[in-house]
Length: 187
Length: 384
Image 1: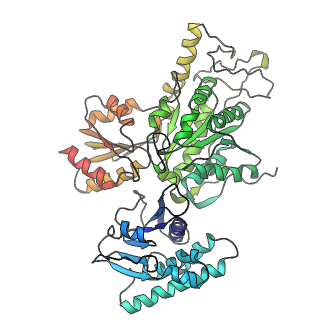
Image 2 (image 1 turned 180 degrees about the vertical axis):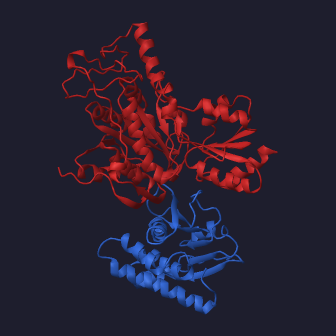
Image 3 (image 1 turned 90 degrees about the horizontal axis):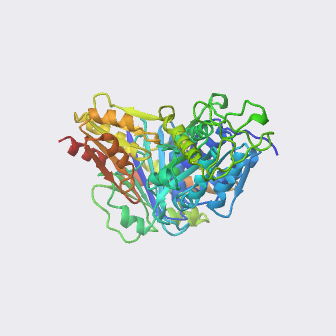
């Protein structure tokens, strides 16, 4: 089976790193094949930015995302650009603090995750992506908790392990609660 | 300097650029001369970190003209040497690429193609430098160019590039694109002793009898390097077998320039690497290279399920172009579809080789490489 994930926001939010962590979790710490591709402008911060991941049991011929099964949206601009690009019944995770103007499409599963707000409460807005990765684990069946944890630890600077793990667990717990509240299974 | 392990071991998750740098080290590259440019910067960055670890030299030059000149110098001095760049830098290198061709300096030039012309779209992919790789410098010559389609191939074909450069004493171009350069995938690295490496032929005659441009049977001259006790004179001027300028001799011009072309042309079969996928009974063929060949493979699988007999000819070597092979395949096919991320470059070679078989160009520019659905609908149309 082939699953396509698109993560979008702006440069500086750790969008590309998130895609990298997710694909490593799938293919280095998990038993799947994975490819990560990225697209961004020449600006190092602030420009629009997207990271795409394909996870599959089989060999991956086409490495890019065509119609995503899972979308993570971290900015208003990304919301406008990508909210209507997902497959029917796709899971869409939206950073509810970053995206305020909304016109959510029907036939999708929208999950509002206050990733940036949670990250700020933990003391650093830049770990919003890790909160989101936590929520991604509980809201989808893409990778296991352990695999994602290993992949995060592999990708962060020394000395930030505690903060990152806190952010990861907060996101994970939030996703679990959200599923209970909505009474839908993870997919 | 401390000698660390040159070759990574085992399975890694790498970007195309990083895999290219690691492939270069595995090939025995000890010199990188370059100037950073998106989307090839990560190659320079990795080499700057890794080369000093193994006792090699990373030299950042003032621009790409100087970069390729430094690489030629390192090659003359006996090192396996490389540079990595993208469109604008590749343009600046062209004159000295001619010098490398003329002096038969083995070296590797990686071009992570981005959108051109000029500074174009630095972070976006293209296949717009395919013809420049072949014809960018003035004069008649041949080079070798390889087109990787995965991160694994960024590793494997970088090694292959060095092997070909050393075997044929020619600049070898690794033509990737921004998508592959920045794409992350799993890479399996074999144990060092299982990686076959080639090194330039050394002279077997005494220094007094050595002629640096006197070819062997395969048209490639053995190469003595500076400091090995041989007289080695190299010049961009047309030269005789001793390496001395022969600027008015028609015979010297004819003999040298034809040999520079023929040492590649006559060895095309040995150099050529292609992949023939589902071609046995194919009525319609996609000819693709680089990143687009992966969408092409998906498309071929897709239409096969519908009963359309499609196949894929993937060129790993794009220069020298496998004209004879394409002619043979075209004879058996109703049409050839060529997806390219440019306005139509390699397609001209395909048309020339396909003779009367129709050739259909699928041209695409901008952010996204071809999607499988774009190629599959072209196949359906072409078979009607």
